[in-house]
Length: 201
Image (cartoon, rainbow, N blue to C red):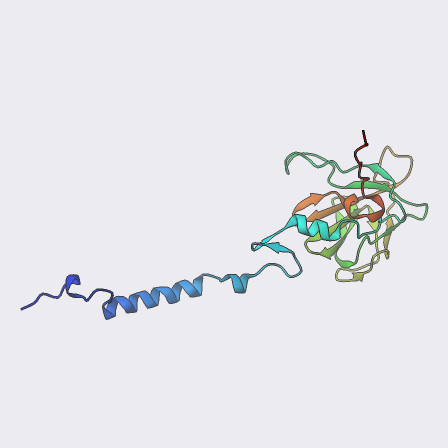
């Protein structure tokens, strides 16, 4: 009488019970593991190899926005990012405002926040592609969910100037790409840095 053993199974073939176990395991894995097709990148965000490309987003928007204070921006304090996220720094720019105190949307977007943060009124606009602008201190009649157009007045500078030591009143403008703060001035076409060309010898 022959003994049933793995050696008796013909090469390249699997027993029925083992095949059923394998099929069940594959089914469980396929249900529990999301595929790349269903996960996908966020809508409207440029991706490279399945990951968000910050450089591509910045290049797309660079020079396409307008100054939130109208005309060429007058910088009271420049962007000074901290060396590490948890350190202190100036995560935005302070821009002097006109006598009317109006603050404008630098680009099209949707209002995602209007209210008080700590002790000052703020407003945040989502411009898409992971970019969000925040302004303070600003009084606004807009509501969350309102759509705004580039150049539209979104509020006025609140009493209590942001720049304590400045002669002119100013507003703080911060821009985040995802969770990282980036220099807002790079998005203003009229304020792109000059390119120095080599001097012929």
